[in-house]
Length: 166
Image (cartoon, rainbow, N blue to C red; front, side):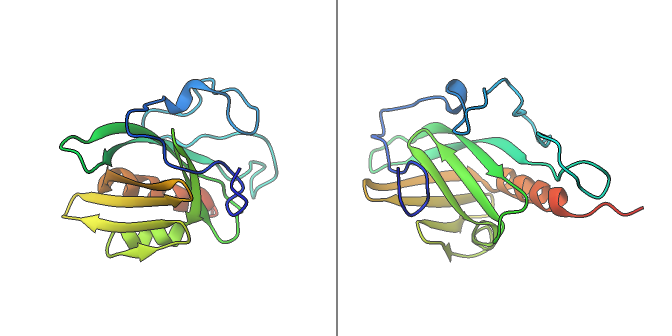
């Protein structure tokens, strides 16, 4: 358990490839397929929002490519999460090697120019790729994403926190 982030950290050896959805979630709830493969938000729990429903928790799956010193990169499944109500608004990237939570603004800025969070660096790589570098005491993991997947996730996080007016 990483005392700075409150969850596991670290970089696994490149040969390890464990599906993100295979184990129960950290909060003990089963991973019952409620995380969509596409862009739909996940709604859990009750609560009282402006119309009787809590703001939606947003989860998405993305595929990243682990960048290594070797000649080949390898795909890695990544769960992207956003829980409305966190202050400051934060996103969580869950990889087989651990999870990292950082301010949503770091991800947003990193899509356009280099941005730095405590244990995460994000920067654009060409016109269609974004690199996220995850730091931990065990080492560094560099993962490249399609920028469109990260932009779609960010749009959904803002939609989940925007009040509905009629």
